[in-house]
Amino acid sequence: MCGIVGYVGLQEVAPFLLQGLKKLEYRGYDSAGICELNGKLHVHKTQGRIADLECLLNQKVISGSVGIGHTRWATHGAPSDDNAHPHYDCTGNIAVVHNGIIENYQDLKTLLIAEGHVFRSETDTEVISHLIEKYYQGNLLEAIGLAIKDLRGSYAIAVLAQDSPDELVVVRQDSPLVIGLGMGENYLASDIPAILDYTRNVYILEDGEMARMTRDTVEVFNKELVPIDKAVFQVEWDPIQAEKEGFADFMLKEIHEQPKAVRDTLAGRIDQDGNLTISHDIPVSLVKGITKVQFIACGTAYHASLYGKCLLEDLLELPVETELASEYRYKRVKADANTLLIVISQSGETADTLGALRLAKAKGARVLAITNVVGSTLAREADAVMFTHAGPEIAVASTKAYTTQLACLYLIAAYLQEQLLGRVDPSSLIALTKIPDQIASVLAMHEERLRDYAQKLVKATDAFFLGRGLDYASAMEGQLKLKEISYIHGEALAGGELKHGTLALVMPDVPVIALVTQSLLKEKMVSNLKEVKARGGDILLLALADSGDFSDVGDEILLLPSTLDFLAPLLTVIPMQVLAYYAAKARNCDVDKPRNLAKSVTVE
Ligand code: M6R
Image 1 (cartoon, rainbow, N blue to C red):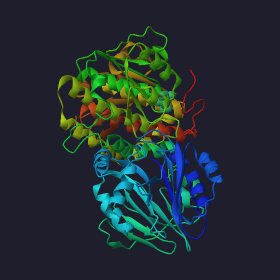
Image 2 (tube, rainbow, N blue to C red):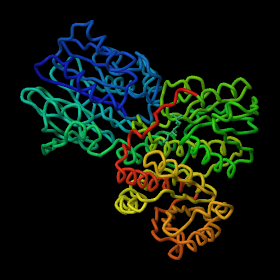
Image 3 (cartoon, rainbow, N blue to C red):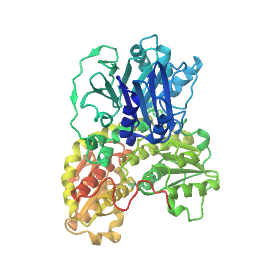
Image 4 (cartoon, helix red, strand yellow):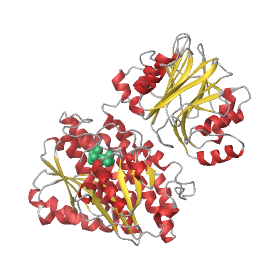
């Protein structure tokens, strides 16, 4: 989730590149850089925001009229000057910017180093520049065509070669790229907002397509370098709509980004046969000999930890505890050198979470972080980190941060099983790889219905979210989503707990969102729902397809694609996010910036 821009024309490149990068800063903002071609390639890059790059460029003379630029959201290697893009090859003849994740970069890097290539960064991207160098024989397009045959993963790549001074060559696979068509100049961007001030005529590249851009021509090819006749697309979005990719709000956009976000989380961590490849994230020494697992987190991340606790309790023969970070800080800390402390935080900067982490660390606990932000305080202070790779989350309400945290937790659970119990179940990991497509189909199948159902919530003062086992953990996240953006009171309850008090609030038409995905608890849950039904509650029931007939308890029944019970929370949360979103919209709430809340809570 970074931003790419590029230009070939007669103007000086810096104004376009800088302005384009500013428009894409929401895509990534930990470092930025440009490369201009002016007889020679000149790379200027820095850690920090685009404003820092602008200061750097103000001290230089930039006169090239061909260039590429990048704003980075780190995935491999912390934010730093060296890790910022563009990246050169060994000779300085090739410069590359890249969005996406190269899954097999470690193997490629080892190979290239053995062949004598010298690396200057910790990024996955740098293997691309060295691969192109390896294949380059004077034809940049051909060299890139060969290089991408070696790559596994997702990429949008833009490349300049010093001895091919009039062209910019690009390629895309699972990461967007658009080419803006001008008069005597052409523009490149990973996202439409960057070029809207210059042109509305664009080529939208499809997966596997490459393009060679000069100031007067744009030629598009498939991977075999066969030319393609591309249709020009006229962009009609205004700049704000374009930033949200046509969605009304960042939250809705981020809800829809979840298939890709979870795919990125899994990228390079499960091979085709369902084997785990995460020992580079979590060294074996970190987990060998542990006698206890503790989770700490806040808010949505805490709800993810509830999932982690249920999962690990079921799969491991170890005690597992989870604690709100703000509570953990003021209790007697029961951690030692054999405790694996799993700290979850989207931002990696939450004050309570960091405070709790430091206490446990002082007791000798081994710290494994799950975070979305490379270079965050949490990432720096933990012994090992599993990055979620969700890309920047702008809406205050977490959506893709949560699902990617669950995906990480599932991977960690499988890894602990493998390392501590010597057991692996490749079929369950194969089931996990199907989740991104299943999330997409939940959205495609149910969004409209949920938008309608949300109208029922609009008038409600309370809504209850019921579940048992893992479904209870998911219900906790469902109620938080509803509360924080729609300001309707939501409450999560374990199904069996209802009759111990809260049932008193269930009256005709009170909305109850019921999660029934856990096979062993299904009958019990249905009995709990009958208690609701008998009091006239209105039940929206979420279940996995082919798991039974719920028509006697559900007023509305939403069937989700069938998956393992353990993986159901990655699907049930989607309708709850969508429901919260449309309830908030129907009440005219500011969905992206709910009142009284901040994205990152850096004070206690
Ligand atoms: O950045 P963190 O994950 O540490 O943030 C913790 C909570 O503040 C956060 O999860 C919050 O609850 C969500 N944004 C709510 O949707």
